[in-house]
Image 1 (cartoon, rainbow, N blue to C red):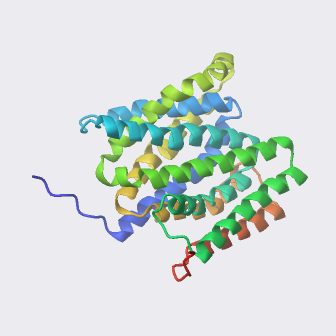
Image 2: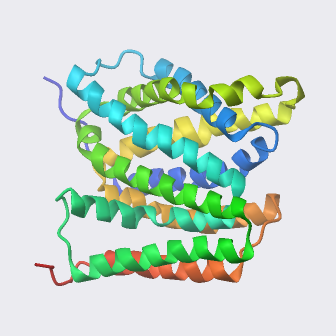
Image 3: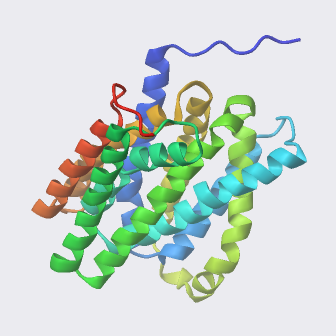
Length: 299
């Protein structure tokens, strides 16, 4: 009987979570550049299908999943791959990097809300108030886009919020499975299932894509997104969920607005508008309030 692997040091765990945040922040920029030539649904499916191929090779030799675990992982694939990838890339193509990055910070609060609904966390006045405050910040972004943006930016913001809800559910629901199963086997199966489920949705976009006009630079962008923000980030994230609470894993999304906005200004010449900055303060205040541990429980 082999001994269970020792838990990593806190430094190694936090370094892994920072790497995930960095990969996801780079993803905003590289995906934006790639989707200047690829249609969003085409880019999303190629990203998932390409990652499924790489991850299948990475998972060779891992113990096969049981039928029951396979069904669970298929559910994780719907939340963490199909809805997450489709709505994130679709929303990112319609709005700016700062808007998307600010909205992504709602993930920890949505994850807490999901944990409360599923009975894994106790509802408290601070937590419920924090969730409400963060939701108000998200609504402010959407409302601000409707006033000073366009219908495209409003649709993009709503798609990003949907992506955040889906990814939050994935983090909470997959935590028990990630603690006992191989991260490589789980993530490989997720992306394989995701590629199959996304194909009918993306088929028309793939058929209509102008393949001959796509430049080598756009293909390089796609390969970079597959290698770092997808294969690398998902494997590291799944490994981190084995040793860290889902709330800690989700909390590293706080780094994304800072890193992504800096990268967006540097490479895409995008700027953060005052309403988005104000919404970010609301969301961060909500996250801080929801994360307080000395709070009165609701009855």
